[in-house]
Image 1 (cartoon, rainbow, N blue to C red):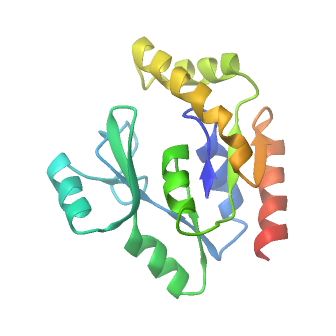
Image 2: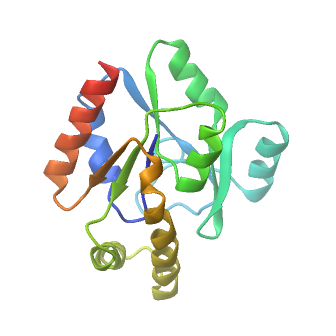
Length: 178
């Protein structure tokens, strides 16, 4: 499990590292969030309508799901189980709420990606130009709470330097999974 505030750089840290580990697969989340420019269904997320997400909840299809930043996100059981059945590891990028839910059922390898500061986080959120100023303020407020939970994770990586953060993640995965 890998968590961290929105804008901490989780995707930037994870993506090149996964290329080094063919037996680790990123579990795509389902979300009711609209697609951003350049995103596609089944590659970045499984984009769902509210009705489709409701049906998945009713069908008990989620390992966990949560309300995050005005939308719902969830990890589908079948994506994780399929990966594990093939003898591979499933890496779940998840918010801290979801991590707490999963941790009630098992003790996964857990890694928290943190920004070097809230000021840096605000700059990153602003630069990506995908949220309004009000949304950024909301995300920063949530980030303050999420940062308080990083002690619940086995590892914390401070993403001040992307190459160094990727190196640290590589070391953790080599130590824990290989």
